[in-house]
Image 1: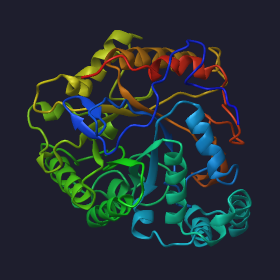
Image 2 (image 1 turned 135 degrees about the vertical axis):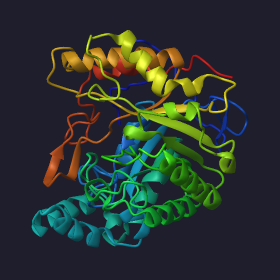
Image 3 (image 1 turned 90 degrees about the vertical axis):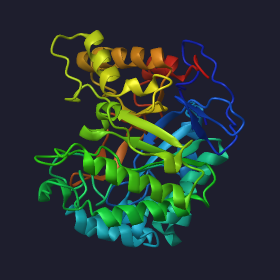
Image 4 (image 1 turned 90 degrees about the horizontal axis):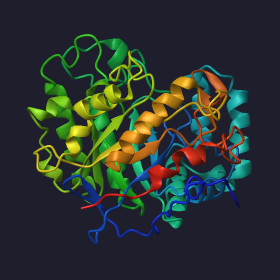
Length: 413
């Protein structure tokens, strides 16, 4: 298969050969392989946390086709999202999961039956598979192509993310409980789910990291106790993952939807239990309220990135560690700037410059051209997806050239 590639593109950058020696480890601000060579994570997000509890797109293409696409773009990593619903019920059949998704989404069973039939038409093994089998097949297909996987716990209740009333935002045992933001985020189930996924990941070559939770976001009174709950539960979650699988990186985001780590300057989280495996993460979009841009000033926004998150890259500090920008992205079509809107073009140029200056690790949002279900709608098109709605090729053939510089490795220990 041939695709317009992010890795080659117009700027002619050469991507170092893949084939890093696992497991990975962290050392100061760097992620290193087992031989001590820097590994720059150049990832794409592939959603699997929706109501069907399998990675998106398998009704459009085979797993191997999508894995080929990812490899041909030059990505060396996928941030693969999952729900705690899946983690605690891995033996659910895919057929059963699609049937249950009808009830969860309010869609007719016939709609989900049709999607399920398309999935099995493209991937025949799924007719007798569990949801865990499908995750395993995806991870294997990626690693067969030397593409690593970071498992990201995106939500507790399988559904679209995120807002402050989806019930998946903050631990239910934390100070300031409110039903709107925490009704599904059952703390003990989350811990058990992390343990289950970490244990399973030991049998899955190519899994190199686990993100504890996507976009932890307090609401109303939550997190007004000096971040005590964040410190407590991040520490517990990290310990659970490391105890179950000491080889994976433990990826931790801050408060305010993974945009604010500033409070660790005065009190760091205790990650001594997983020393040598710790990685920070941050998210940044054009609409991220934590990074306001009232004066259309890239310098100001870049200063905000550094003040709230990027400071962890300063070497020699107690909090120094690798930082992956694990979500950033733009709408891929319809705008006057090679498909990008004016706002997205300004944002993208600014964050790209900041990431280039730091030679940052990153994960683009997102791979998926559609979702089986999103917000009660079947076959929801993801206009931020790198792939088109048929999952055949890139949605915007100009975007590879915009991304190419980010694949370069310019710094190292």
